[in-house]
Image (cartoon, rainbow, N blue to C red; front, side):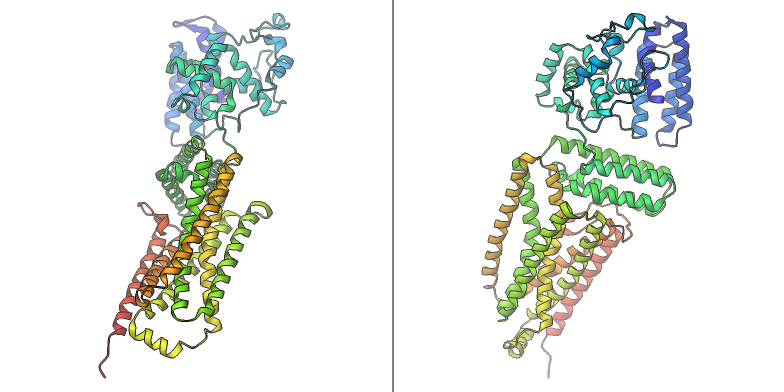
Length: 611
């Protein structure tokens, strides 16, 4: 109601007050009434960080109207207040996607032309009998102050005291199509053509990055920016599909909606529901868009991830409502910024190929190096019978990873929390297994223990427990990486246009081929290294991986809401398993101490002893 009143003030006031003189006393009195209603309503709105400024703006607007202030100042003041309310209360003013204007002309002729005229000039067959007369959509003075959002509201709710009835029975898509159609009467075909040519020039698309920017603007405002801006504006009103729409099922749209839901739950006093919505905002939304956003703006991607962690921490610690509101509003603004950047940087075939190649190669390389270390150990110690268990482990893990991707996409819905919980437990278990394997290899790097092992065990067969351990290391090395890769690939698949998904598939295939070559080279040449150097390097690598996976495991469980989070004001390094939380860094620090202590203990224990 308030937004509609402000829209009416911005359009009508200049018609009834000119140069400080009242042209129509009754209409002027109505403007005073409207502004008083707005000021009173804004005072009673729920708390927001911006509320004091909004209350002051509403009061100033009411005073300006009472004083018969400048028409331009009143219109702009009403428009600014309207925008402030939309921003503060996160009101969705744009359609989810650009309306189809294919049937808009026919719809206008069947519903509107009888009153407004076939040419939109307000001279339809029934116009003469109506008082007040229907709106002339070609009247620049009035229509240059009308936004698409205002036109849509008028079509939806009608205008009280006039023959303009409400058309809420029409589908929202039809009402938006009518709003876009009638908005074109105020511009010329030449202006729209000029705008179409300008739209293709570099930098022009930043004028209207999203539908909300187009829907909330008025012709007068864009003309004040410049003739080119107005011409582009006129073109987009006739061709709204040229602006990428915010699909409500897109990951970043889901993230924004969940953050808003979380904030509303928190205002209602339901902290647990608010926390679960915040967790879903990350796992079901933002996490699926990270890969694409990382390609466009790496620093923004990290900042949003840290802000989401800080937001969840506020909810867990029962922070004050105004503090949570401030953080939530800042967070949604950052996500919307990310959505705008992502829409401008849609994946091309080359982009899809590169992103998929990097993700698969990065995750697969870690697994290959682990498998190579274990394989070299088996070959060096003369226990090749364990190789079949090694291969069985990674083959099963790879097949299960592919099955997980297919199942989560088509068969069953694997929630983000379930995915992160599984990934977290797998990572922590893998960290323990890596520590044990690394300690064992480190022990073999010392001469006395190696020769003792060779003398006593060279001809022995591996025990069943050892074979199972080899298979487990192999399985976890690949399954952990495969499971972590699934959400990234899902996100890329969703961000890629169908035309470019061939590039995505090609990237996966190419990365797989490259990894196979690397695996062959590593296995071939690592076995030629001196036994002490091979085992020393392998044990060091496994120890480093154990620390990395420990950090990733804690972060995943925190994301799933299974562990508390105390964020730190530092930048994380996810590739190294370093996340800005007290819990993750504390566990990693403890592991580093244990690893260093075991290394020093091994050195002391290996020194010759006097008889």
